[in-house]
Length: 90
Image 1: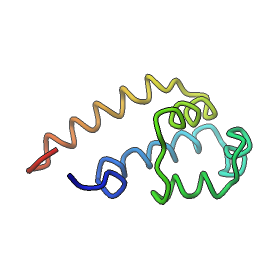
Image 2: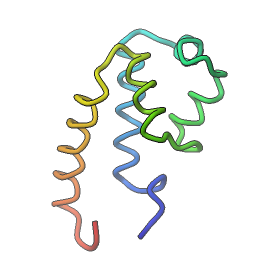
Image 3: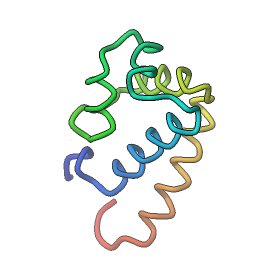
Image 4: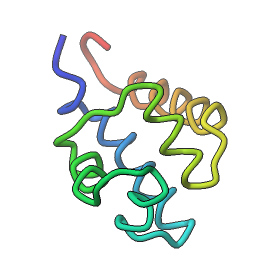
């Protein structure tokens, strides 16, 4: 199994996180303030240098004004679509 951080599916997750933040009109610094973290935390997550666990994902979504369950459901659908097109183990 490959490391998830470097997988095409993790790229989709990172892109979704960035688009959620931007759709809310938040800078990385503003989101970091909402999370009670430093700006570099948000930057590292968005660059794929830092992984999010499920609790952090929930907080990230909430700070962006999104329902984490809905975001996760959308991601799972996208992951399934992408994985179906990709040969080899998923």
